[in-house]
Length: 458
Image (cartoon, rainbow, N blue to C red; front, side):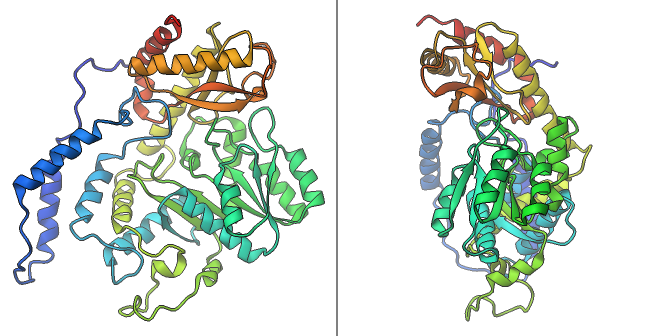
C-alpha cells in the first residue's frame, strides 16, 4: 500500500494553461464576428472581490482531501473542471437547441454513454440538477403511467421519495429492511397483497450504509404483481463497472437493464461538479407525457429539444460539456481506468471495516457493499455509545480527520446485541464514505488519526 507524501497540500494549478489554450481554440470558432464593445473588466476590482471570495471559501471542510471521509463529497476530475469553465465563456442553456447547440448534442451523447452502461441502446433521458429532480421526474412518469397507485421504497431509502410522492399527490409506504439494510422481500410481498402498488423504488446504495436492495427478488415479484420498478442508483449506479462487488450486489447491478426507470448522479461518483443528475427510461414512448407547446423557445429547429423531454426548463449546458469531456477521457467500461477507481474505493472500505472489526474498542456495522462504512464505539449502552461517537467525531475533526455521524436502528449496527445494552431504539454511529480512489493509500494515516481521537480523554 503506497503511503501519501508528507509534502504540503496544493491545489492543482498545472492544468490552468490548458484552459487558456482551449479558450483560444474556442475563440477561433467565432473569428468572423466583428469586434464588440463589451464592457472591459476592472481587473483591480475583480482581484479584490476574488481575494475576498478565496478568504470566505476557507470556511469549509476540506472536501477535496483524502482526510475528508465523511459525507458523499468528491472533487470533480480536472477535465470536468476545465471543460465546465471553458463552456462558461459561451454559457449555453440546454433547455433548447437555440440556447445550446453543441452542448445539447454533447448531453445526448453523454447520456447515451450512461444508458449503455446499463445495457440500454434505446432509451430516453437527460441530465438534471441532481438526484432529487431526477427522482421527481421518474416518479412523475410513474404516476402518469399508474395513476392513483402508491409508491413504495425501503425504510432506508432516501427521504426524498416520500417527499416527492407527497408533492406529486401519490400515496407512499415504506417497506422494512432486513438486517443487512436491504428491502425485506417478505414484507414487500405482504404489502403488495394488501395495497395497489404502482411503483417499487429499488435503492442501489442507500445513503446511510450503502446497502443494495435485492433487485432480482423484486423483479421476480413484478412478474407476479405487475408493478413498475424505479431504480434509485443516484449514489451507487456507477459501481456496476467495478470488478470486486459481492455476489448479491453483482446480481442486483446485473438486473438494472430490466427496470422501468433509473436515476444516477454524475456529481457523486461520476467526477462532476454539482449539480449533475441523470434520469433514464428504457422506453422512449414516455416522452409523449412531456409534450407541450412553446411559441418562443423552439423556433429554429425541428430536431428534438431536451426541453421537450424534461420537467426542468433552463439547465446548464456546461454540465453536459463537463460530463462529455470526462467520459471521453475515462470511458464507462468494465476493466477501464474509471472502473478501477471504483474498485479502489470499495477495497478501501473493506479494509477500513476489517480494521474496525478487529479492534475491541468498536462495534463493526455491516460489511460494506460499496464504499460506505459505519461503526459504533463499544459501550455499556446505546446512549453511551452515541455520546462516545459524538466525542470521537469532534476529536477526529480537531486532528483534521473528518468523519460523519448517522442515526441508525440498533439491529443495523449491532444485530447480535453484544456491543451495548439497548436502552434506546437507535444509536449514533460514525460513518466514513471512502469514495476517493486515494483513500486506499491513506488508510494508515486515517487509522492513526482515528486511533488518537478514540483514545483522547473525555
